[in-house]
Image 1 (spheres, helix red, strand yellow):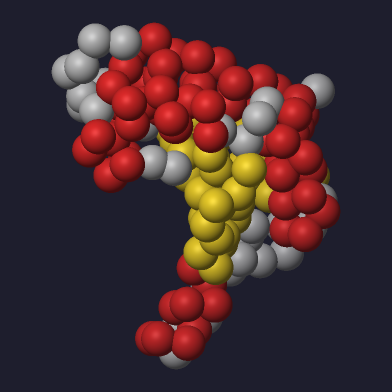
Image 2 (cartoon, helix red, strand yellow; image 1 turned 60 degrees about the vertical axis):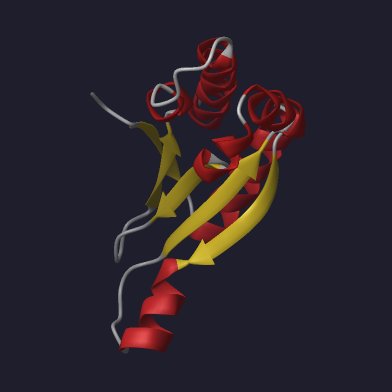
Length: 131
């Protein structure tokens, strides 16, 4: 079972990130967290790697519903979106966490419906980036 879905977007990390954040906002998501993996690896391990950023995206309404269904749900939030770009590549891979796969771990009534709705919104974001 896959736990992600992805798309490829032409552009630089900065330009694609702006597109991703704008598309997420259209679907009601904001960015709660950011992890610059490349910078962290360089600072902590002195290892160089290609650009790799993890954005923690959250739709507050759905997060509220999910946490209301199960108070431990916060351990599975937010929805991570990875942006990665290989050296010399003119494209950025945008990888979305599949909330239906992740929230499928939870056996609480109603959570599967929330997960499917969030997945549909994230798939809409992915489609808008390449359409």
